[in-house]
Length: 301
Image (tube, rainbow, N blue to C red; front, side, top):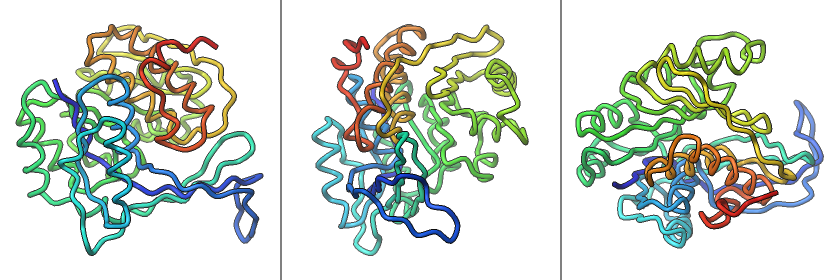
């Protein structure tokens, strides 16, 4: 069984600031670091480090060749990544405040240059039972999802960034949703997701997508899992001193899906993912913060 992460590859420009910049304000950053990133790349790295055979598909510009090396060093097969001469690699401008929280501006760049021909070429290398992991940072998602369903791939969707276009996707084809509170509320059409209890959100998601697995992540409050009309399973978050939360959700996704692909039970995979996410928030950067399987399994704060 193989994992295909068809998604974004970014160059992340991470600024350390005392507080997030406000309208009309100019502030000085304490530091600037340039990291590999993109939700697709992060999740591919996490899947590989979680112990599964992982491939990444997507597009970069010639300015992003170093990102291929980082993927390969993490054990990810990059044969399906196309290098485009006339496009810049996607990038993100990230502010990290003193609490380790972040806010992000994305520029799609080459991530928005995916074609249907590329999708067909990539998907032809996979077969029924393989796992396709998607986010909302590349184009042609509706086509990719429908073709993957025809092939019989297990489809995992992290609908981030959550935009109106997500509601137009063939969501009935998705086998597993990985999402946070804000994404959950928007997917359910709620005006104020903060007014709903976590159990209400997860049960509403289970009712909305009865044939899919749902994982709701809530940061320091832990996470929930539900499938169909079953009872929600809650996973606690492991304590960690937050430095940079940028890739925490991507780490959780990769280790949960990777754990399930390796035969772990849902509780075991949720626990492993929580340990991995705790390690990631205590480290600077996106993909550089993602731990190895051995580190995650041994984590005992």
